[in-house]
Image (cartoon, rainbow, N blue to C red; front, side):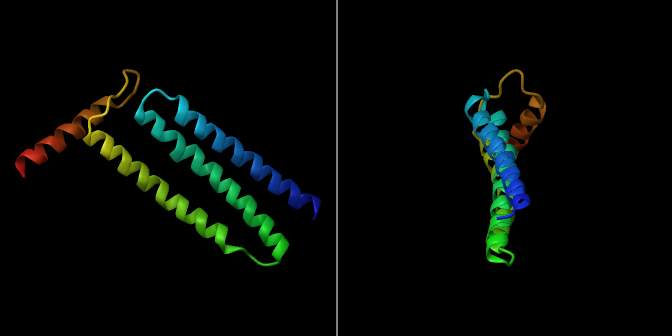
Length: 123
């Protein structure tokens, strides 16, 4: 294998591994649910995307033609991660999960909860 392919693949693997680790660490260490939600949706998505790009470069070089499997997985990941995070956050708001004092944007959460409860009562 050529040296420059190894360097590119290694760089993407290290970059992706660092971001996956940071996302996992954030999921374990951040103080409340809403801040924990950012770690896997942002950092881990970037990390997994980098790992998949490294895999795509390696497979493409070895097989001699473009590998679409990794690109499709990356596309699926980039489409589904924000939608899933939004749905989980809406569910957390609906169940009135506690927000720590340091979290900014509490008024937005309170307004969303008020709007939700007024829509339930009017229906």
